[in-house]
Image (tube, rainbow, N blue to C red; front, side, top):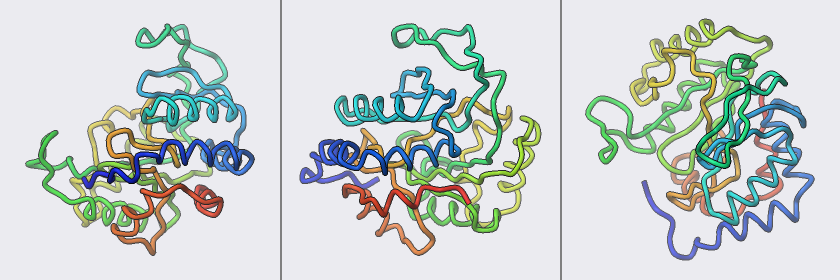
Length: 249
């Protein structure tokens, strides 16, 4: 994975400035990403998990942990019931966690990873980042080009498809595996480790945060972009127009 150059070391300061100076636009983007809701129960992770209750708290945590502390920031794919579970995160200040038995499964998701697939290991990638992008596009094709695709800033892409109804865990698994079994473009790039049990506590990187491993911004991807476009754009501070690309169709 290409690392960012020394000239991009101030990307955290640039993104922090952007978040503060375009507060309303960022809040609107985060609201769209959180299924159009300003109040919710989700996991925020940096990588330690803590309960996040609304979009304003999410904004504060991104600015502090993501840009001031230079951590990668993640959010649970699904929201959960308003009931807060009894579980405690022992990794960081014993924070309260959501009730994981009550997920709101209202979207499909898959992840492409250049270090996934036969012959790959943690230190060796069989596929290229371009391969992971092409597979993300193939998933989008399968789901009728209605997906939101986010570059993880590092090894691959996150693909989301919003649904008009809620699914059970079993239905989620069936829908995800249907894609893996049908697409022909490098399906083993799709990370299937979390699919078998209907994983509902999965967290993905938040759009327009920064990957601490590469210093690249996690950006939404459109179908007219190639991998060179993705890599170039991920080194720049976002624009207000870029924020508008984060939406579920």
